[in-house]
Image 1 (cartoon, rainbow, N blue to C red):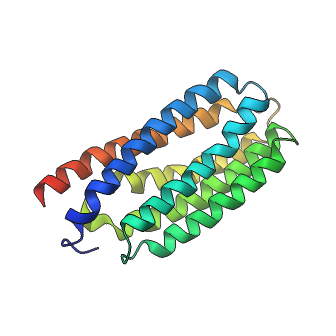
Image 2: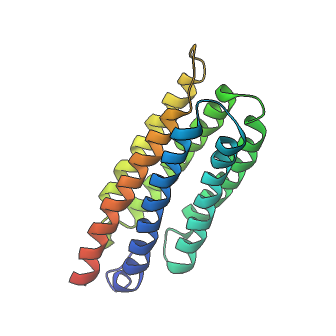
Length: 182
């Protein structure tokens, strides 16, 4: 991404990242409060999260039209849509299947996030996104492993979302500085 695109894109990405932070924290609190088992509320929350990711990626795509990350964002949209469908099926099967679907999504979406953030590293504020993508891959493997544990739980998903939200917040703050400097 060129430095001439930074002033145009950075403020919109900053706004998106702030919204993603707020959503993640609220979502995590709601899942933590309702996620001891899969009920109507927790099941709905599980499906809404990847759908929100789709909406965020579409906003990002429109904002950064013509830049290199577009392919990664399209992949992210596809992965998140497939995940929402997979979770809609998995919530009827139980927590282990939810964790497996979420784990695969965390791994694949983390890899995509890494690629997109690396492509944007010239604009600044992307180190938190790079770290978040890498941690997502590791967390996804952890969720898949936890699915086979004796007493799997959804509460780790709330922690995962909170940490991801914090990375979005840090990146938004850094993008704010980048936009002012540009």
